[in-house]
Amino acid sequence: MSSRESSDAAEPAATPAPTRQYRLPVDEKNRATKIMIWNFSRPHMRSFHFAWSSFFLAFFGWFALAPLLPTIKEKNDWLDDDSALDSNIIGVAGTVMMRFIAGPICDRFGPRITQASLLTVFSIPVFLVGTARSFATFALARFFIGFIGAAFVVTQAWTTIMFAPVIVGTANATSAGWGNLGGGVTNAVMPLLFKAIDAGLKNPDRSWRVVQVIPGCALVLCGVLLFFFSDDCPDGNYQDLIKAGTRTKTNPWLAFFRASKNYRSWVLFVLYAMCFGVELIMNGNLASYFKEEFALSQSVAGIIAGLFGLMNLFARTIGGVASDLAAKKYGMRGRLWAFFIILFCESLALIGFSRIGKIGFAIPVLIVFSSFVQMAEGATFGIVPFVDPEATGAVSGIVGAGGNVGAVTLSFLLKIGGKSDGFMYLGFVVMGSSFLVHAIHWPQYGSTFRPATAPPVKVVEDDADVVEEYAAGPAPIAT
Image (cartoon, rainbow, N blue to C red; front, side, top):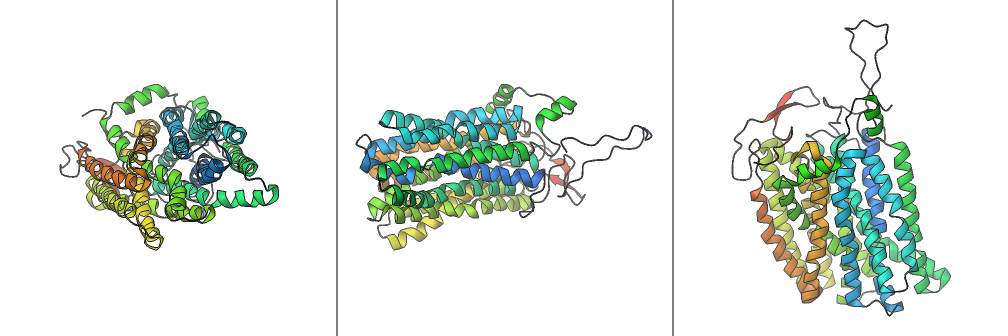
């Protein structure tokens, strides 16, 4: 059902209208207060599963070329080491603009239409990249493929809309983490798919082009399915609610302007660059790094590089859960301290990984490093929903774009000192930036060192107990 059932006309006026029935317990805004992973019912869990799976496949299309770059360089004289790195940067840069746009568009038209449009429209350059015969056309295709990465913004906005403040950190972290898992799976699977196709074609230059059809088809299929079989919000789809008069149209650009005036959006923009930006750099470079640094085959290097993304299966969720648990005991101060500690540990693990020259030690340290990266991402979006709940999509867009801006700008560290030293420099940048967490403050929530100066807002949890929830209600725009 797309809207609440109306009461029968014959009933007395005093009789309350029946409410929509949900499979999950909900709060006063019909947002779910629990997550039931094996439940696929509409609207909450159906949207949850489409949110993470659509982002997973967005990663599949976005980074399908990265683990195949060694073969592409070998078979095409228009691509060398420097231009391959440049193409990685271009592929990530394409996402920046679209992430800024996707958030406000999501606020206006809803996550369902926005996500379906991203997956289907930008599957086109995924199909067409195999026709590239020069670096210019290859880079142009990668730029537009990067637009698919904006699916992350919609994923986070979608789960924020569907889940209550008491569980939103876990919901956001899990959906994004399982989506990010696509990066690791892509590094591991694409070389195997390439190998299978090349076994029949026996032409590596042709095989890497043909294999791009697989992620392209997956994107189209997912986009069509989620458009017809999911909901924008607990009460239905935005367009239906607007027609029924139960929802008003929003101006997407006013929402973006509102979010951009909040300095917390931009602090988190920088901090997200230090975790998701780092992940994007690793997704684009780890396979070639292991192949070149440790003299491994393309398939083996891709599988090991895939371990980095595999940690998304649980690590990002751990970051969200840690944020929620810290919040239950210490409020927003707990969320912020959890975020700072995780981000600082990430920097130490990255510096350690960059100094290891033996594959037997590099793999376990990579796993530890990756775990902290994903946890930091989950902790970030344990905070994002409370920056300004009235402009959730716009805030998510700004913060999400920070990851891509970080990947673009910080990738140049790898060109300055090579990949090994570049990773070390990157670790020190993350370490210094982690202290920006202490700059985030709300009058009603406080910060890491400063207490709240305004009373918290009361909300009702699923057990009907009224509690003081520091994280409910819109944050002030500028204080």
